[in-house]
Length: 235
Image (cartoon, rainbow, N blue to C red; front, side, top):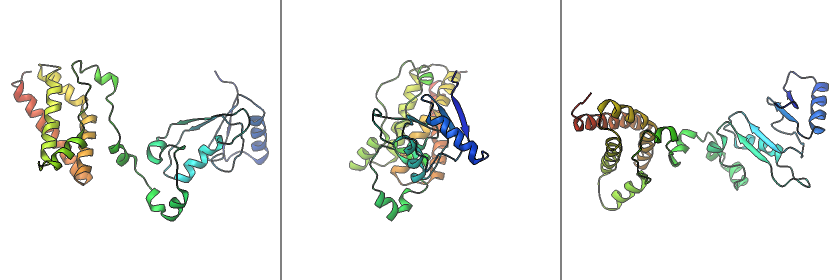
C-alpha cells in the first residue's frame, strides 16, 4: 500500500501545517489529503493529481480546487482530475471554455445547476449486468426527442411518443421471456431507463416534476397490464 500519505485540516497548528506542507513539497510521490484547507490559495506547482472527494454547486470553488493542479512548470505536460462528487456533471468539465465576464455579470445562470435536471440531456446507458438479462436486444436506442420532433413536424399528438415507447419496452420484454413472473422482473430492471425517457418527454412538453412522477406510474401500470394480457396472466 501507499506509505507517503499525510493529512491536513483545521485542527492542525500553524507549525504542524508548515511541517506537513514542507513534507509534501519534498516528497515526490506524496499524497496529501485535506478538509477545507487546500481548496483555495494553496500553490504547489508540482501537484500532478487532484481528487475531489466532495460535491459543490459553486462554479468558482470547483475551478479553484482543481486549479491546485493546473500550475505550469517544466516537464509537467498534464495533470489528472478524479471527480468523486459528480461535479463535472453539474458544472461542466474544468477544461471547457467559460466566459467569466458572463459568470460575474449574470451569476444566476450559474447558480444551483441541478444534476437531476442536467441528466435529462444525457444519454442513458444500460448497465452491463442488466443488459445480460436482455439477450435479445437491439443496438438501436429509442430516441424520445427525435420521435417527439417527428410528431410535432407531422401534426401528430405527443401522446404518440408514449405509445411508441411503451410498445418498444413491451417488445423488448416479450422478446426475452414468455413467463409473466420473469416479465415482471425485467420490467423492474427497466425502471431507470423508463424514468429517464419520461423525464426527457416531460421536458419536451414543458411539464412539471409532479407530472413526470405521475406519468411514470401510469406508464408502468399500462405496460404491466399490456404484458399481463399478452401472457394471459401466466404465473
